[in-house]
Amino acid sequence: MKDVLRYLEANGRADAHEIALALCRDEAEVSAILKQCEEERIILGYKAVIDWDRTDADITAATIAIKIQPQRGDGFARVAERICAYDEVESVTLMSGGEFDYLVRIEGKCLKEVAMFVAEKIAPLDCVTSTATHFELKKFKDSGVSLNKPHGDQERLTRL
Image (spheres, rainbow, N blue to C red):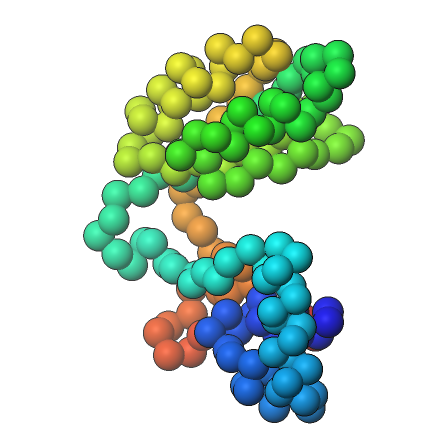
């Protein structure tokens, strides 16, 4: 199953036939794996990797490091659920071994919008003790794809 998932992760538009050919597996077996993974929520969706710098979209992205004081009985999951509920939030990751507990990636239209989101929605949460906002200036690689190669020369990194 892992080889099928890795191939799909690197080639999101591949269908069961293409995956089976690439991995020398039976197409029916690959189809069954994909169906099972979707039903068990291992595959949660299919997504394109987009270089937003090549579009006219106004997107400002930032990673917010958040330190919290976990509430008794709730731990970290309840806070993560609250943060995940905001539309601006792209991802929430619980971290270990550092000064902060969560890394939260958000997107907005401008620096001020992102800063206001942090000031008005994240920082006021009772359990939040500190935040540090890091704005993305330029993305060089996303989901294993280099964003700096000339068009037509893109190669996905396949980790099989």
